[in-house]
Picture (tube, rainbow, N blue to C red):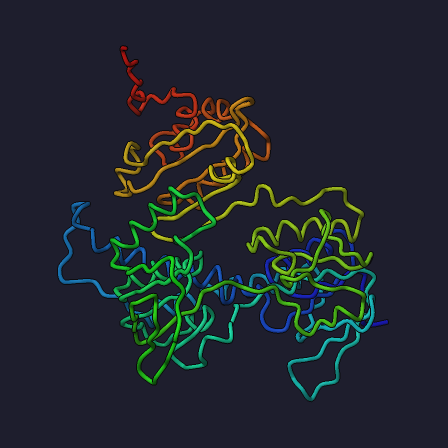
Length: 474
């Protein structure tokens, strides 16, 4: 049968295409169904395009301080939004073509269209070309990697000047002012990017602080930096009475009124299972829309697996890719390697960046864990001074009795790159003392992790010793 496969993957994002390629590597006759572009949201409308825009904005911001490095520039720099967008589109296109080549070279059969289950082993693929007859696939195993979509609540009006992250990436011109609803990862990244390019930004978060999921000290550093960029922050109060005209968006935030030309809504993403007809195969999502799986990414239907944002609540591309390897190996070869969300690194591309893995201090306290903390500021690091980026720190949380590292939180330049060392170290269950003993090259930003490890045991050479409390005399 022409359309009979060992493994069929639904969704071609960072979970789906990785699962398809890994299954093919293991010898499975593999199909991939994707309704738009391979690479999914991450490559086409998420991680890659946003970071491309952020890279341009960051370079422009640094250009404003070139004189601090002894560089004299005649005239003034200005952002060319059209050129910035063209660069972003070129990067996306090149990476998309790369994935298409990888799928082809691994002999993965790609179907363009939307998938729905006819039965547990049969999938109907409806082409995007409505005049074409649907393809019917038969598959021994199915891996669902359908991803997520922006949450679009009913209280948000439908208007051309109110949009979500995908539309924001395709703006034809740079707005002069914008309201951003949502102080999570996506909202704060867009806020920093727009502000660095000279846009007047007002950010509203109904919770008491921005970035509520990250280390409190790290969030405070980013909050202070955002204010220095001119971003107005409104926290602890919900946005209400949102109204839009052709030229203006207005809303109430407590007793205040906020207004701007445009509004960007960034209040989370929902798992996407639309049209899959999971009920046909005896599967249901939970109250939050997630599809439950075990540590091997198996659903309760033996031949069906699920990975990525659909299995939530950790919605990161690298988490989806890690699950993809587990699911493909399990589906093809009965692999024994389990997946765990315990050490999924978090990377936030704000100004400055945040990289984190493991427990925060707040989480450790809530769990009743006794711990030590080592904290080293970038202001005391030579390479940070050289780079002119001294805003931030590295914090290491270690178990008080075993010294095992429980969490690492870095805020500062290249924090999203630096966190990889910590994730690897924690995967190997090493101690803070062992991190401190590892020789780190000088002068590098990576030294901040070593210095923080030394600080856990108050052995830090490049910080003055902590003040000792004086005994009170009676």
